[in-house]
Image (cartoon, rainbow, N blue to C red):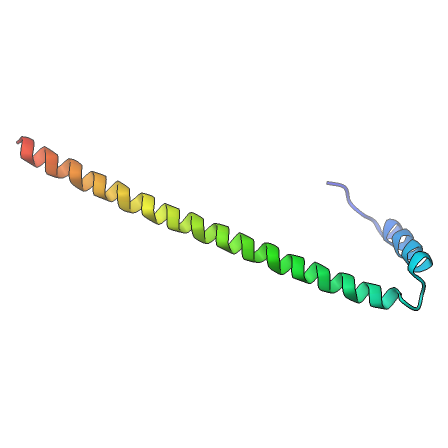
Length: 80
């Protein structure tokens, strides 16, 4: 994964100030920060939902495995 150094950040900020203008630059930073925050919250919610689905699936798998073990024990007792 590439790393961004201070020189690259300085160049990007300088170009952004030239393109957007020094007056509107803080407004743009604020909007970008709010967008990044909302994307992070969205991704976090998705990760939480996926992990909860995985936990539920694991719980169901364990319950079915226990039931099949119980059924095997009952069938073995009937055979004896």
